[in-house]
Image 1 (tube, rainbow, N blue to C red):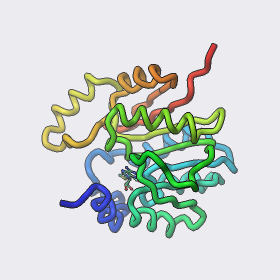
Image 2 (tube, helix red, strand yellow):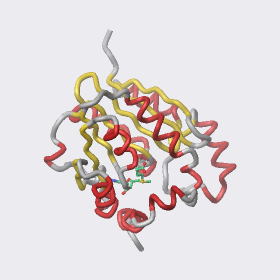
Image 3 (tube, rainbow, N blue to C red):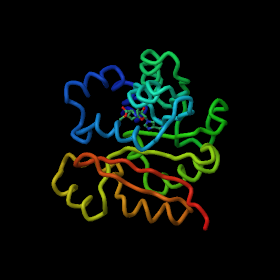
Image 4 (cartoon, helix red, strand yellow):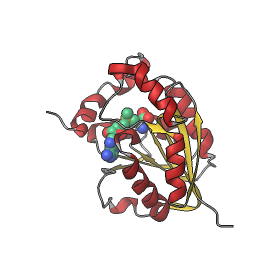
Length: 213
Ligand SMILES: C[S@@+](CC[C@H](N)C(=O)[O-])C[C@H]1O[C@@H](n2cnc3c(N)ncnc32)[C@H](O)[C@@H]1O
C-alpha cells in the first residue's frame, strides 16, 4: 500500500489539472476564494519573508511571489516541490516532513508570515497545537502571523452536521477543523485564533501570539 507521501507524489502529476477541471475532491470547493482570503488575511507588504508549509505545486506561494514577497515553500513530496519550483524559479524550495522533530537547517530563521493551505487536516488537534507552538516559538518573526486555510467548520456542531451530510465522502483518516475547539486549544497555549468561513467546507485561521496586558 502506498504511503501518504507516495500518493502526493502521484497526485503532483495532475494536481493543477484536477483543480482546473473541477475533478479534485469535493472539499476543494471554493479553492481560489480560500487562497485569496489566505492572502488577504496575511496582510503582507513587498519584501516580506513568507514560509508556505505543504506548498504542493506552489499555487498559494505564487500569490505571495506576485505581491513581491520572498517565499519559501516546504513539502514532503519531491514531485510536488519540483512542480512548484518549475512554476516559481525564485521559490526557496525545501523538502521537509512537517511531522519530523527536526527540520532542515535552511529553514532555521524567522519568517514575517507563515501560511499553509489544505495540509493540516492530515494532523490531529494535538499535533496541530504542537506545530503552532513550534512555529510561533521558533520560526515566526515578532509581529508576524500564521495563516492557515483548510477544510473547516465554525464549530463542532456544524462539523457533525456536515459529517452526516457527506456520509461516505467524509474521510475517517482526516481531521477536519472546528473553529471553536481550535480557538480554545490555542488560548490554552497562549495564542489568539480567529476564523473566517469561506466556502461551505473550508475557511481561514489567523493565529498570533497573545499580547500580554
Ligand atoms: C492538498 S495539497 C495542498 C497543496 C497547496 N498548499 C495548495 O493549496 O494547493 C497538500 C500538500 O501537503 C503536502 N503534505 C502533506 N503532509 C505533509 C507533511 N507531513 N509534511 C510536508 N508536506 C506535507 C503534500 O505533499 C501536498 O503537496
